[in-house]
Amino acid sequence: MPIGQPPRTLREAGRKLLWIVIWLVFLSSPVNDLLSGHHTTAATAAGWTGLAVFVGTYLTLVFRTMGRPFPGPLVASLVAGLGVLAVVLSLALGPHWLGLFVYVSVACGATFPLRTAYWTIALTTAVMTAIALADGEQDLWTLVLLVLLIGFAMTGVRQLVRTTVELRRARAQVAQLAANEERLRLARDLHDLLGHSLSLITLKSELAGRMLPDHPDKAARQVADIEQVSRQALVDVREAVTGYRRPRLAAELAGAQVALAAADVTADLPAEPDLTGVPEESESALAWALREAVTNVVRHSGARRCTIGLLTRQTLDGRVLELSVEDDGRGGPGKGAGNGLTGLAERLEKAGGTLEAGGTRRGFRLVARVPVDSGADVGSGA
Image (cartoon, rainbow, N blue to C red; front, side):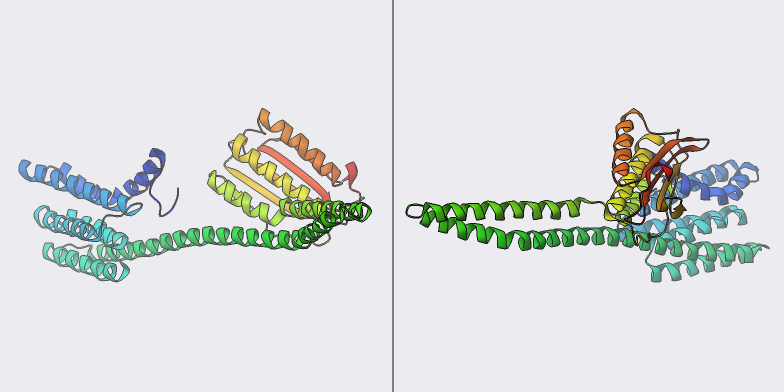
């Protein structure tokens, strides 16, 4: 459930509303008071009406605060209305209704700015204390602590929500800046690779054009040089693009965490891996394996939990880096994922690694291994 964001679907709206409704447990005392029959018919009807208005106002106020808050003046009016209802109902119907001040305190802590929330929570507690003393309430200090603690706890929850939203925005900005930096780096590299080659091609083309009528042999040599330079430039560009397209294991781990979180899958991921001695081809193959495995978990498994492990093992053929992805889903990818696993096995085999994938008692498990030392030959013995 996205924190600090308005619900995007009816299901998310239902979850948020359920989270608020759970805390209506403190209304048991007023409800029991109305059902006890101690009041007249008119007083009971007025009590039910006042309680319905109070609960409706409270739910509307807190629900909107969790997504799209009301304007400040309207929020102040609604909280003041809750306070007035709590005072009137407590004075008119007795000390059983003092629990309403808990919700007034929650509304103050959840909707007002911090400075305003602090003194309004204290004011709510003071008003409740005065009413309780006037009614001779015996369990006063429990109510006082409850109103104070819950009110100030809501201010802490608001700070936590605000921090979460700011972190989410900061992460998006960092990702955008990283993408921009990558584009700039690619532009610089392409400029460095092609700038000299294209300038040389242009110069030699001009020379060949001037030599062509009178010195065809020299012009042909210039054309041959142009062909050689252009071929080398093409090779350089392909190498540069291949380097940019090669996935990195650390980046794939970060992407896996985001993808699993977006799919509501609880993820258990390892720390940033130490790739000392791991060839780029092996790291790339393992990164592809992680991407394919996470894709299968998100799209096909219906899992609620996914555990990703990454460790170095010593085998008879040398050290290997082992990646394991295990989920508690339905037991494997769907029909459309067979080609993906087949291609992944072929990619790992080219890097000297192996792939194991199959169902377990608790779901599905994929294990990919690649050699750590560039001279090692993992083969099937790994």
